[in-house]
Length: 406
Image 1 (tube, rainbow, N blue to C red):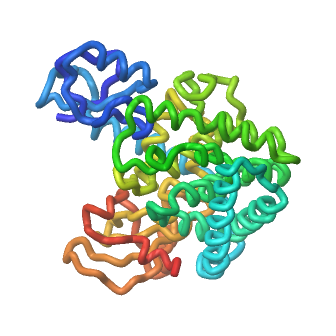
Image 2 (image 1 turned 135 degrees about the horizontal axis):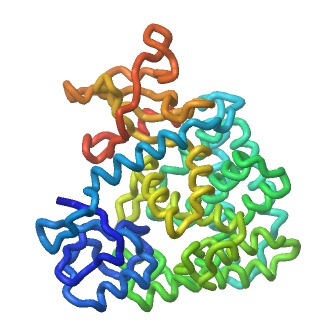
Image 3 (image 1 turned 90 degrees about the vertical axis):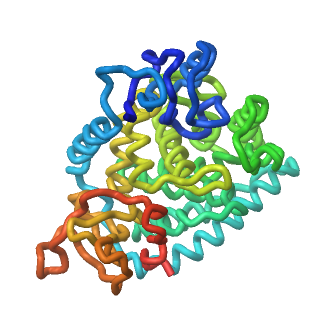
C-alpha cells in the first residue's frame, strides 16, 4: 500500500516510492529505492523534501500514515473551496485569439533564442527589442489567456529552454493581472519572466540538455544560472529592480532550501515568490527526454502540496484561481463517461469550465468533437460534470488535438 509520510518519519528499511518533489530538487538518480543507510535520509531532508510516498509492501510501514488515496481526497476537498472564486474575464473567444497567439509564440521564441545567443557572446541585452514582446504577450493575455497559455504547453526538446521563458513570462503576466497589480508592475514582472533564465546561456549544452539525471557536480553548475543571469542583466541599460530580483531569486524557497542565496520566508519578494510558482508549474508540465510532464491539473495539485513548505500557500491558491483548477489543455473525465479537454475556465466556477468532448471511454471510440459548457443545464449546452482529471497516456490519446488551437 502506498502511504504519504513526513520526512521526519523516515527510517532505514523503508521503500521510497515517490520523493514527492520537483524532479530537479532531489539528490538521487532515481525516485524509487530502498533506504539502506541514514546518509540517504539525511540527503532527502537536506534537499528540503518534507513529504514522501512509501510502499509498505516493499519496506517498513508507518501504521497511522494516510494512504495516497486518502491524502489526495483531502486535497481535492480543499481545492473545491479554493475554486469558489472569480477568475479572469476573457474579452474574445479562444478561436478568435489563437491565430494572433500563434504568431506571438513564434516571435517570442525567436527573440529569447536571440537573447540567449547574445548573452553567450557576452553582449548586453537590448531592452528596446524585448519590451514590445512583453507588451504583445500582455495584450494577448488581456484578450484571452487560454490561447497563448494553451499553445505554450506544446514544447519540443529543441526549443524547450526558449519556450519555457516565454511561458513563464505569459503565466506571470496572467498571474499579476489576476491579482490586480498595476500595468507598470505587470510589465516589469513579465520582463523578468522572459529573461529569468538568461543565465542558462552560460551552462554547457552537455549539462543543460543532458538526457538523464544530473550528477551533484552538474547540478551545482545549473544552480549558478540565477546569479549568472543577474550579472548579465546588470549590463543592460535601463533594467529595473523587478526583473533583476526575479532572475536572481526565482529558485528560492520559503524553507530556505532554494538557491542561490538560501533566502527564506518573507525575505523573498512577492514577485520572486510568484515567479517561483510559475517556473515550477511550467517545468513539471513539460515533457523532457528524461522526464514525462505532468498534466496541468496534476501539476497544480503537486504545487499545492509543496506550498506547505516550499511555496507561498496564499500565492499558490491565487495562481490556481488564475489558471483554473482544471487549466486549459487538461484532459478530464465527465460523469457521462466521455473524455474532454478544457478549453476555457468559467468566470465564477472553476469546477465548471467549457470543454471539448472527443472520446467515449465506455465504448473506447472517438466521437464527433462537441463543445460543452459545464455550467449550463442539460438541453442548454451542458448537463454534465467533471469527475476527475485523466492522464492522456492512460488512454493513448492526445487531448491537444481537440483544443481548437490549430
